[in-house]
Image (cartoon, rainbow, N blue to C red; front, side, top):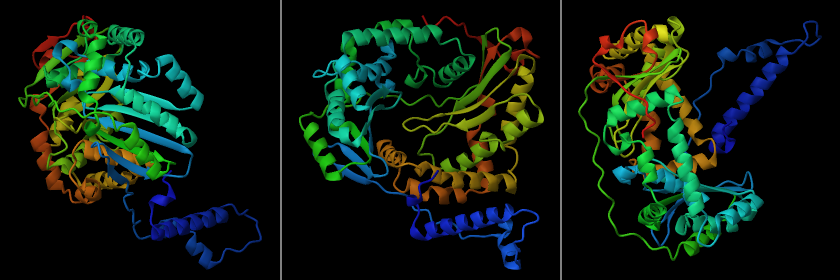
Length: 493
């Protein structure tokens, strides 16, 4: 449910009037057939929902407060007194894109042990107990392109939780026992990573698209075993410092007191002068490939895709509309044909995963029974190719744009979502006015735009096709789609 406070007074009045009318109509509908009440012509006229019309809601983007501390740390704040809770998330430019090739998995392990391994002042067991006693939580993780450390606490415990949070960021201890537990968990994850056919297909498609780029690398037993506690300590020191940090805070807090606490807690934290290691761009060369993973299952997992776009692409909005029409929901072409008309799959979709620092990927995915594997692949290919042949219909265009525009406000449902969204926009370097102009940019997309971007950015001739399934049960051999490369499942030893 969208909080009413996110709308201006005029819009609130419209919503209130609409609610009153709905309540009145519902009351009319509950009258007994033999009731003595008389329905007047005026009441009949009001009780026709289809005939009602209202001016568009004047939705204004909620704003948060941006402050830069003396040490360079950027803080976004949005107060919300609805509940006595405070949420804080810190974003740091760090990730697996910066880890050595022979130690893939270092970033993820560092992110896991950063919190679980305690701090130099608070051992891990004591940290666990104190947070549990306060009903607070501190979490940390590092993915491909950023590190995130966050906490949730009751307002009355904000000072203590914030102090522990500062310890985790500045002085993690990386307790040796917790390091070994994390490495054991990582090795167990590698051992079990081939249990799920969907996980296999997604992993192998990423490797096929990105090759030896850091975005295509995955941890192996050898790379995880090569990671030491000292590697984690060095990784944290290298990338965790104030000027590399953007913080988003929401909830029930005193603004001036919180800012002063942040200034004090991080005043002695030195900034890092060492430049970031260079990371090459993914290869732009697009070429087809057919990869098969033999697995004795009754359902084939199909993934196909190629290198896509990043957030700075000038055709971003037309691509989003095209994306929706092709594979973005129950009304998409893929769903209508493969699921509804042909009954070949329960789930089918496609999407451009918009890259924030590097180009993301275009992916089309589905699962189908083994006996319809080739038929489904052909349908996927023909529907994707069809997007490049002719303009979409007026109805498709209108539905896609209306759906994207109307769902936009749900990105501002909670204060924590709002402030984190605005912090991420700066963190990833989105252009100014991105959110403010988003709906207008979507509304301007035309049928000609959709066809143009489909022809430019969809490459059916250069798809990486990955199929996980039992080839003995396929309706036709995969060789008809190209030379088949067999991938052996060896748990990446």
